Length: 220
Image (cartoon, rainbow, N blue to C red):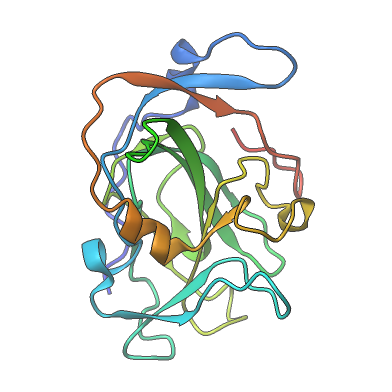
């Protein structure tokens, strides 16, 4: 499998976002961003070709807060395979937190719910990555490579652990909120529901500064 492409010389990082940060009380901040026009799968873009879902969302014991995606070849055959952003968003977390996680990227996405017309936000977590190709504050596009599949230094067979959260405060503190669908989303069902959205050309205020510190990191 191919590794990460060469990084651009001048990635769009948090320093560039500062121009869009709006003043707010306490640690709550916001950035003006465009909404995504839909969501794709994080592997085998855009339709998860060559992959299968080994485990899904389970909010009762034994709890599993997201999905595990494996290459159809099994074992470590998908090691180093590309992982893609599911939509247009902003990287709010990109750190090696070690423990049972290794490299973790979290990206925040804004979209307009066609049923209500309201703007909503989600966080998507990409876990156990071998390599990270993005940095905190970087704006990413739908289908852009953000990392590669890993195994957390041999702790697991290579796979992508993937979560979608409605609650923007979770970050790495997954037990800080209730185990219900107000806080969590079934990733596959969410992607299917919002696969194609109308392009919204305006920009909206995306909330930032919502995470608790974890392993010395706070994210964007």
